[in-house]
Image (cartoon, rainbow, N blue to C red; front, top):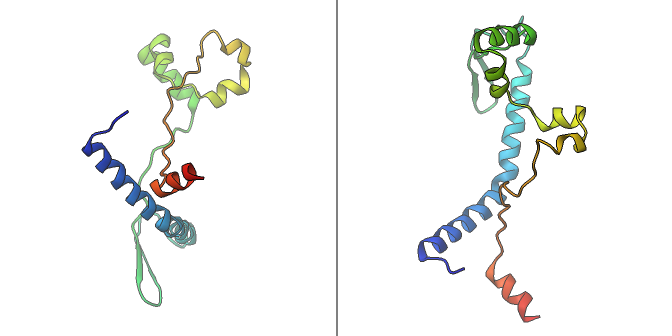
Length: 141
């Protein structure tokens, strides 16, 4: 397949960014690990009330943490299911639910799934960057 100049420009830009990302990924991973470590220092709700901001002091900087964000969680799945069933009806509720393959695989055999589960090559492709000089060296050998 022949690609346009615009396509080649996209491929080359991806190559540059991919190589840059490979160099900085360890720093990104470390940054995320440090964020988890910092948050873990301030979980005690008695010492650090969830509604209050926090300022931590390093040698060279301050670290400010906002008050905890409010998040919702369902405390009774059966009560939520019953309320939705009453409001929507069972058919529309079932259509709206997401059944995971992890759940399905745990409780239903692959043979029984065959009547309503299909496996097709519709997932994403993996992108790999290969330098042209490496290709030339391989084909010359």
